[in-house]
Length: 273
Image (cartoon, rainbow, N blue to C red):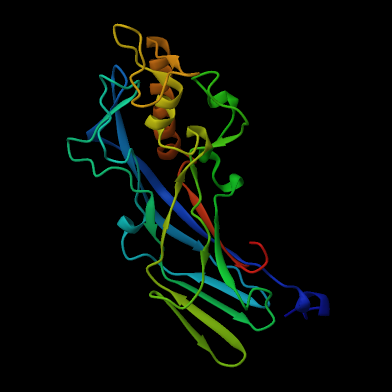
């Protein structure tokens, strides 16, 4: 075995573990639909977990297997509340039994072990990210835009990673210390993805309704309590482009190279992380 240099021994390692959402299928369902002059189905993202474990001199993060793929199911849909298609540019009908959006997943068991000289020993935190290199399907640029002049600041994302989680003694988080190392065991941790910048960090229906209105016979706004302002009247051509964009999201997650890889990183929560 090659002897480590002093520099290598001193190196502080911040470690990332990777959750791979393999075999992801964004399933077409016969339940709730978007209504944009045509029926546009929503779907589920389903996945299994594969794990990369990386060891550093001072810190080790391990992620176990999940008990069920249902723990890693992400339902990319609306909130479940009806959006009447006769009043809004983009309607949504959950009456067929669609439970609505569920961007929350339960992570497999996590074990974090570190020495007292690790920089994050006093205030450990888990950070989550969707690395662009590992999530090509989730990253978009101008070539993916069908509805023009409603977005700025490319590139964009369909969904964003969950917020960071502080590690502290509470239900599901237990600590053991042997004088040399500290080990946290984290079970049943629920984290929630967020709608990304491609939809203005809101659901697709709310995003498109914030950009377009469906005019009635007098041409007035149908968005309750919100004047037309800078929104434009929805045309048949634009409605077709909205359908294209939502279907493209479905294709991105179920096609070759699709899915999501969530990176979990142990960081020092007291250093502005």
